[in-house]
Length: 298
Image (cartoon, rainbow, N blue to C red; front, side, top):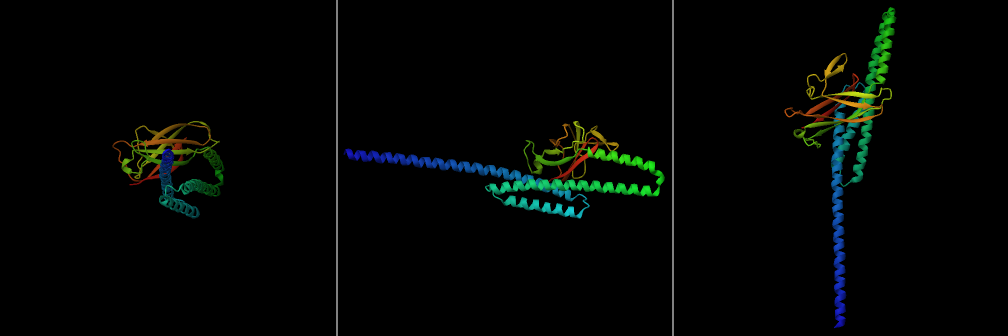
């Protein structure tokens, strides 16, 4: 009888131990599953944000393709990179959120394409400036050949051109601008009917030749019909021997180093939101220092 009690006690002890082990395994499995679900949810959010960034970059390429680029080679390179963005965007859309390694690679690809686009934009600006300079030089040469007696006038024009060159060297430049569309709660949205605010994240490039200090940055936003948005009486600034209206104004303290800033445009309650290509222009010190197209889709 005593021996049976001992055996029964041992069996009960083993049963309890086995139940504890099984319970521990079940708890561990549930914890691992919850952690995995949280990781997948986070990767899903990162994938959606990365997809939005790719879509914004694709819109920028569309805008630049509509510009008059008088260089076939550069136009071909721009088209090639535009197709590359479309291919990467399509791949991202079909990549599972759980594929963290490929999403990280696509994020790096995005940074590379952005750098390439900035380089092409600089080349476009440089090409336009060179064409303008060559046109001016040809005009000056024609004038010199036709009338040597105008040497004093030519000398004055040369000094003016030199002053303009120095002025261009000290001119600020907006090197990049990313547009985000927000709803009434300041959350990002792609649904046109929910858009109530535009957010512009811009970068003012480094320029050690520009005098540091407080700068007045004027911003003009035009809708697809070319109409200036938020135009108010008296909101004007000096530009090219005249005055033009602006949408927004921002005072910044510039030190000569690269400056990252953000500005917003909020739609009025009765303001009609159009779909299509918009444009944002930045002005400072009486100069146009950056133009960027963006699109609002249906």
